[in-house]
Length: 343
Image (tube, rainbow, N blue to C red; front, side, top):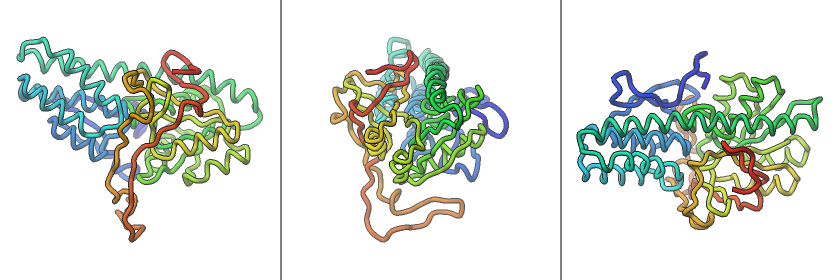
């Protein structure tokens, strides 16, 4: 990621190697604040309260959280307790449990004295692999964007995205944004329509922040404007990330994604989902089987901005955090293996 004119990862070990350093995404784009996490409890809070977000980055944070727990107490009892604590922080993104299982599997047969070092090593590897996976997604997506731009070479390529599936949601590159960054760097004139993504405005606050830092032309739009833009021929493709893709190809992503897929289908606009293999859940048959996180209604009734938080409605609010897009509405899956018709 390009942040303050330098390339950085969204999560790194602290200088002493005993904790991790993450961005407090609640403060973006108004302030760039790095915070240190030094316990499983701190990692759980950061995940649950959305200091850190995005399925791959949640998984990486949880992996380090488990390693920090074992550095404090490497017993079987503490391994199980920290695993459960972290796994329950957010229920929808499959990367969270996957990463915890990776770390637990790497240490379960070791003597307690060797567990913390092995756990940190596995968490480091999860982060390195995430970077490589996302770069590969970007490279395959670049080929797709080249082909799309070739259809209308006289104008910018217009991509619509929803929520944040960039480097702030991963260790680096992002999933949905990786092809966009590589296309921009390759000289393809690309413009991004950025859904604001209510209720937490992760598009308006985070995706736009990322794109601006990389110099990618973009425009923030209200969530409900996407269908209109598609009808006007101003969207060449929709690319979104995902928190979980089930065995049949259903896609669980930030609330509002399903409506974009419906509009894209109605207007013959291709709808692509970018994901690494770590976000594929072969154990869950369909999207109907995914637990949908219901977050506090305050995220709907209140809006945070540069001047603080204000209430925007006097009524109570429901706040389902995700919806499911049926596989039939997906044009293709952008993965580290290439663009797939079916998952």
